[in-house]
Length: 290
Image (cartoon, rainbow, N blue to C red; front, side, top):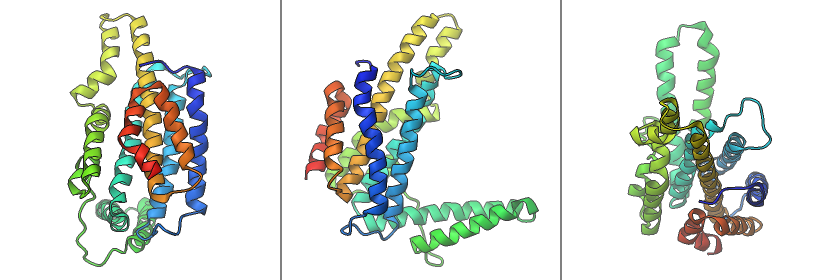
């Protein structure tokens, strides 16, 4: 894969940062009347864009070569996969919500309410008599009440767990959406999850180059060359996933001023790298123009 020099990277980094901020403002101030906000969809999408912006900026700061800062280590790039997976998780969730946005938005928050409720019960059983926990438990109760109102949780309602990304395709009725989620799981989620959970494959990916150096089986110079390669592929993946997330949300909200910005980003990315070019052709070309 070609490396990322400053000129090429700035062609997509600066407009992407602009679109992230612009998108968050549009969701907050100009929510389209054609999209129902029931179930807290507005909160989900607004939060997702804000989190994506922070995650993206964090990753780029970690991976940056310039400016040179004391304490920033080239090996930090090996810690990025779990952050990249967080963006991918959001893509899965938006795809899944899009098929039945009102019902699944309610489900999303109901499942969240249930998890917080269970945690609150555990904490009350263990720390209920501890004065140091009074403020925490009080805050938890306020959150549960507000979230319960948002999700319209009924008394004694049976709430099913919200599916994780690896299982979302099983719930989808649309065949093309099923196929796309299966594709994401195979080509993106599996690899990033392995790196995040440090399965044997993930451990090899994140630690093996350093292990070889420490065992004197690889010179330090080769490790640095390998880190440059990992940095390059990691940044491309993060750029691609961030633009994909925004494209999924745009396909639902249809802000007139956003579509052209995203198509520009896909065009620039596709000019340099096959990964975003293939993904755009597979889904986002038609999604952004339909």
